[in-house]
Length: 67
Ligand code: SF4
Ligand code: SF4
Image 1 (cartoon, rainbow, N blue to C red):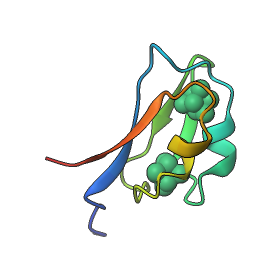
Image 2 (image 1 turned 30 degrees about the horizontal axis):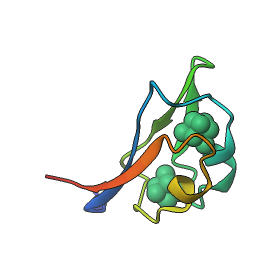
Image 3 (image 1 turned 90 degrees about the horizontal axis):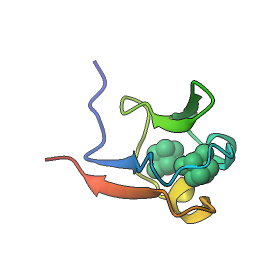
Image 4 (image 1 turned 180 degrees about the vertical axis):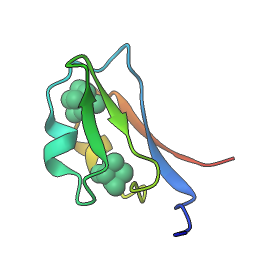
């Protein structure tokens, strides 16, 4: 099994407006829109590159270090 990255994106659902920008910009295909209402991270694919966090118009994503 591939080792997960220690850094990963966290979506703050209450702020997410489901615009799909993070889905479009993620180089790893790690984001999807869940039930049309908020973005969801696949932690097995996310490498914590921060591209989505930079591009999110709602500032709904932070990149955190896994505990
Ligand atoms: S870019 Fe931000 S607001 Fe848009 S779907 Fe992703 S987390 Fe939600
Ligand atoms: S941090 Fe990078 S790899 Fe992870 S979801 Fe955001 S854009 Fe994709």
